[in-house]
Image (cartoon, rainbow, N blue to C red; front, top):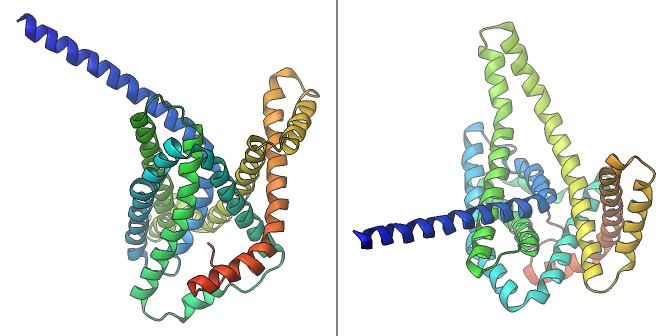
Length: 325
């Protein structure tokens, strides 16, 4: 009997440690997830375009295929690579973060440049030339998964940089939780967004009350505005996150001037308001300065990427330059 009680005591102790570990993993995952918010918003804003032009019945299957590809990217490919980096080459994390930050700044600035100076989108022309819906769907899914790989790499690297785990397995578990959670959040939101106009159309046609029909028409009219708003917020988030990554990365590598200058601006501005708002004002000024820096840096990158890096990559891969998302 005493042996059984001792065994139960050990099981209870193990369960207590496991529960604590789960809480620690959840807390670390929440912190890491918050840091990746800018990339997540952009991912959610970008993905709906991959189902545009398809029959409503194909929208959810396409999103599900992209979701599976995203999980494969994060858990099967990027998680092991991230763990190897963290434990054998941690000095590479900051340069890789800055490479991803450069990508975010370039993409955000390119979107703004495209709005200010509209130019033809060869990807759209290529889509219009494809007659086979099955081939077009396959092409769109592959393109979405490739784009997701870049965003997922940035998400996992950002998460890795803020995780403070006492052991290798907790670090891996936290990264896995972040990867799964953000994938479910992004593509679950995308599925809801792309189907809301169908829900609104059904309500407008089949609603039993005038209010229900009006609500349905309102949903149909509101969804394009929501997608536009998501795109705007996603672009701003990309520039903010990308600029912040570049400034913090430069600071970590010994170039302190940009970080210290923005910090001084933020603190000086915050001193001009009441104490209860100082934290909010300091954060807002820092985020605004990071975003402006990200925009300027991204605009500088546009000719570099489109005239130098893009053609070089195109020459190696045999694909046209500038096939972003």
